[in-house]
Length: 411
Image (cartoon, rainbow, N blue to C red; front, side, top):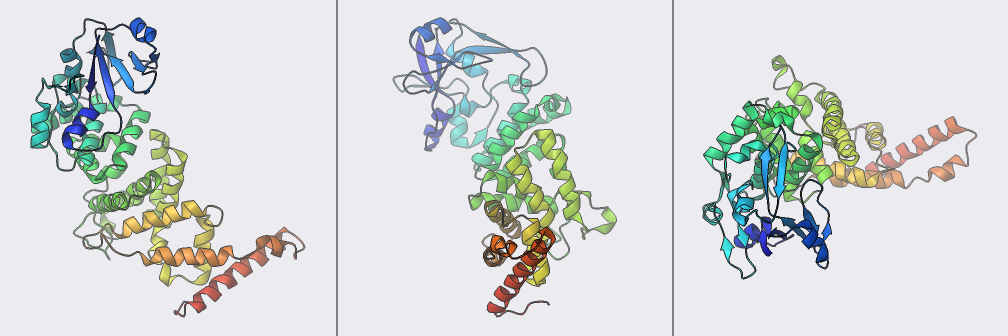
């Protein structure tokens, strides 16, 4: 039995990056031998074991044979006869097909180290085309390693996989898993640009694909289309280290612009409402978590008001706080404002723009939250009176706070 370190840990070590998780491949062993040595089996589709002390993953060397469409259409063969070289040959990219033996020697049969030095993402073999998830993985690696380019032959293979329908076999959970990881990378826009260049974006996220070529709103930079704006905004959210729900909300905040009739360009009448309706089926289709969905819906519907917040009447300002459920969900409201801030900086020259509306609305929320609804309720005869009394008190608090700021407001 021989154990080799493989995959991302070897790659990141060669790149001088922190190693998060270490994976190992075991050559010349059977599942029974692994269990006898105290390893705990966890693999469902192929033999993977957890080390008894470190809990790191050890997988038996294996080969794969395509038997059907999609990433699950494989027959896996793991046995003591499978060699390290055979196991490395089934991997996606050359930079991920490097192994290190216990003595520290590197085994690199596919030129991964050369591609690391050259900054190239290149597929290992034509078998790359058998697994559509690899399109998503290449796009995600492009978002992580922004200095890397994709080999032309790899991009051509990705396009062919889209053209022959292989990408359509992707299951929703796996699509979201890769998109979520890509959104959390250093430069998320690169993932979507790569998906677009391969043709996969139109199949996976047609709602985002439709934004490209649609001009931005007239008051902004009309030469920057809505797709480019969203990509800049997503990168801004990443640069500010915002959470996944915020980044997804930024990605989807302008979906309605993709449905604006051409004759209305560059205006986008009621695009917030149209975008709100697009997000629901998108999230259902990809089985996106509720926290991401809910924040995206709030952002799509109300981000336009936030950008005009200094023009709002006190009554409209209070309505914004109530309809975004800011009083009951202050954490989500702060995330909503972060998404709006990323939207605001998604324009050339505005990357480091201070978003004054964020502090303004948080102060307004503090003013409204200071009203003791419970105490007011005790002074009222019934539910209708309570609702009216609390609403009046909150509006009065907003007006008082605005007057204290000594800024002119609309009455």
